Length: 188
Image (cartoon, rainbow, N blue to C red; front, side, top):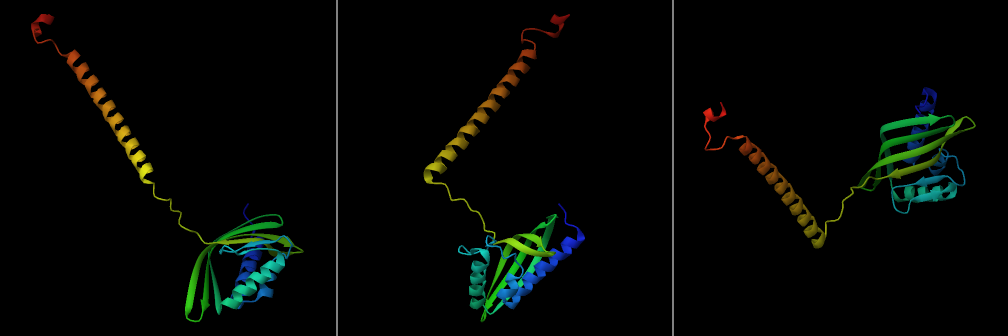
């Protein structure tokens, strides 16, 4: 459901508050954007970045902020939907992490759920992911041989069908021709 303008404004403000907390590397400000529920789920892009509850989230971001000099957040296309006291957000997000002269830009997707508690919107779940290319493994030599054999059999069957149809067409044309020993005048 489309969020009304008041909800959209509040969620956009919450996103900006999250951005500010990240860029300030301020764990307490970051926690202030969340519901602080014991079962609040926050999943980051790294394999070990899953936290449940305020304590694990605080630990995770304290570790991240200690490992970098600066964090920059930039939002891309963002959608906000809502139904009553629950809103959900999807956004394209760029996070730049710098340490010394080194920088890495994470091109991520953000999905989050926010709840309105005592007239304030807070994130109750958040998931950041980095899209990866899905590449299927190359077929084994046996699989490749089977694929080639199947393709050859299909081609041969199509060719045989085409030849049979052409033979049938030629036979029909031949049946319509007068016999060689008849003349035109034999019909009258």
